[in-house]
Image (spheres, rainbow, N blue to C red):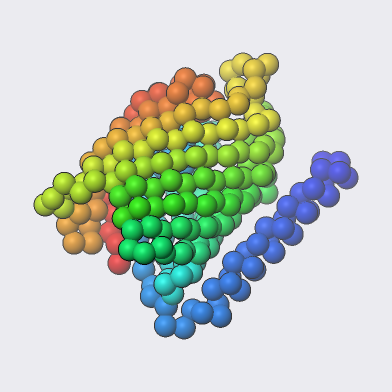
Length: 254
């Protein structure tokens, strides 16, 4: 690694450390009297922005957060199983700030820091994401996220930093007796990434969608979703990833 690349890596590492400190400090002053909650579960696939973190294989996930009514600080972990590597986990530290407008509307802004400590190239996979979202009555949501330094595979063991923006919208419709319908649409715009199969073609965007049913019984939640990615998305995921797949999950909230 040359001096310039090394300097950039050092800056990214220091920026990540500063972001983590800022996120922790923002909540620490108002953590007294806050409520704690968590979630643990298992899924047939670990999906993030329409792509699989486990190469289509099952994995566990968990989440622990503290909420004081306006700020939420969360620590999360989800199985990560990259091709040609052993199973590991992607860790997240996230901070959300919420504003309510009447009883119907909710505005939120958030920061997320990602780490993959068990990955062979964990230093290259450290990145940050900022988001802003709007929700209506817990039914409809619109979320825009941006990562200025998303790591993507350029060659085995070599990563390139890219700018990525995602826009996602979803609808949650209760059906009664614990059942609910979930529908989601997403669009990703990624600059500086090339197809794994056709490196001469640069990936600009891909779309993804999901539809399925959820069932809640007390603190137990079950979900079954059909997830579909556009042809560009399937080509980008590589490894023969299907464009349409079924993802099921079970979780316990506490």
